[in-house]
Amino acid sequence: MWVDGEWQWERHRWAWLPGRWVRPAEGTTFSPWVVVRGADGTLYLAPGVWKDATGKAIAAPPPLAVASVEAAEVVDAEGNAVDTGPTVHEKVAK
Image (tube, rainbow, N blue to C red; front, side):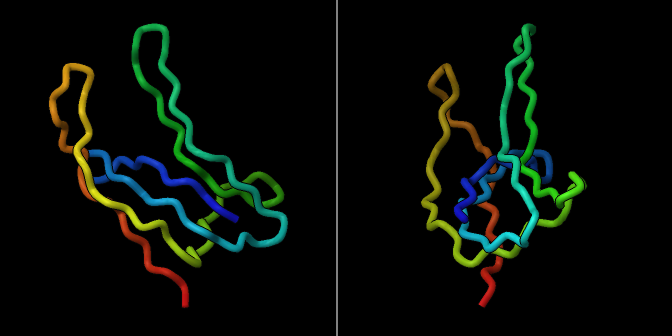
């Protein structure tokens, strides 16, 4: 199954975790990441999470293949380049 990439908070800044192909274990489910803006403008992030059949959070299955990602600037609402941090690279199962 394909799992989309997502932003992660790593060492005091954002980092991109590329999309990847995985083979999930039987009975497991994946809830993708989501960002919601509160009424006061605060952003709330719920990271992607894998769960077993009972709903308990579990470790993600190892990636079979990972998307190729080119680093690029992220620009804020005022047009300024923002340093978001590195791309997180996972080891691919062989």
